[in-house]
Image (cartoon, rainbow, N blue to C red; front, side, top):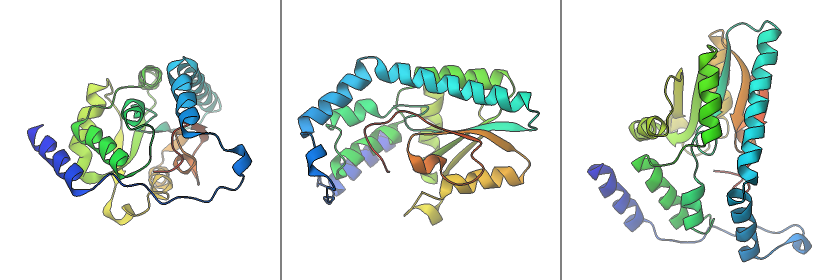
Length: 225
C-alpha cells in the first residue's frame, strides 16, 4: 500500500490539472449549464433512480441467461466490465465535479491503484447468482496489465470471487481499447465458450461480435474512456 501511495503522489505531481480539448457543440439550443448538469447527475445517482435502473439491468441479465439455458446453449458464460458495472467510480468522479480533465483522471487512477472503488451491490447479487447456477463470469477492464494486483484486491474487497478470468489491457491496446473487448470475446468463443450476455457501461464495451445479449448499465457521467 505504501508503494502505491508513493506512486499516486508521483502521478499527481507529474501531471497538472489541465482541461481536455473542447468539442464543437452541434446544437447549442440543447445545452444546459454545468452546475445544472452536475445537479441532475447528483439527483439521479443519489435520489434512488440509479439503483432502481441497475436492479432492472440485473433482471435483464438473469432473464437472458435463463433464456439461453432453456434454449440449450452449451457452455454459456457472461462477460462483465469492471468499472461502473461491478465497482463504482461515482464517488471519486463526484469529488472532481464530474470533470473530464487530467486532474480528474489522475484522481480516478489513484482510487484504482489503491483498490478502493466500492461495489455496486445489485451487481454483487447477480454475480453470485450466476456462479451459483454454474455460469462462468469473465471480467474485462480497460486498465493495463500492470495494475492486476490492485484490481484483484479491489474486486475481492468489494465482495467478488470465483470469476473464471480477468482480462486487462495488453500493451498493444494501450492507445485504443475499443477493440479489446471484442477481441477477448472472440478468443473465448474459439475455446468453445458461448457468451450469452455481455454487460458494459459504454457502447464500445458491447460493440462487435460474440456479445450474446448486450446490456448497458446506466451511465450519465462519461461516454468514452
